[in-house]
Image (cartoon, rainbow, N blue to C red; front, top):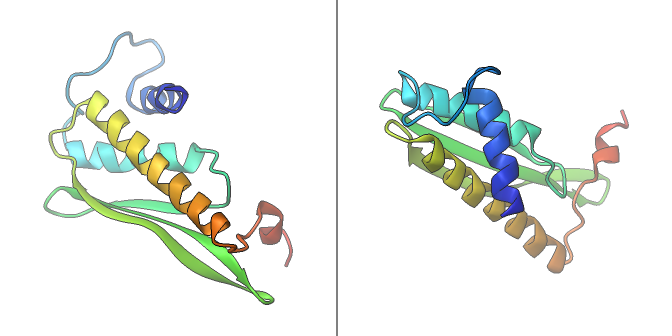
Length: 132
């Protein structure tokens, strides 16, 4: 429930002007465009338990492709590991639909990260990206 509330707040920050009250019933015109931008906003501002590179891209037909990956240490190198890839039809989503989809996406990414840790995979740490 805490995850849902945090996601709800991030979605509202993106979709609603600061002085607005309530929720919107349907995403603004070009719904999949709004969904794409909102997904990127929320995922970029989410604190995952390991570094995650995520991206949402809208297709011409209105679907949104969502991808998330992390990096695993292999010797002195890092290799990308795909955590999630999905295509969702976002053309007629409500604000609640978007929140529920984001909850599922965040949950899936965290489950995949935990599975990798349990399998003994050494995930890259945030500090690993600070060294040049």
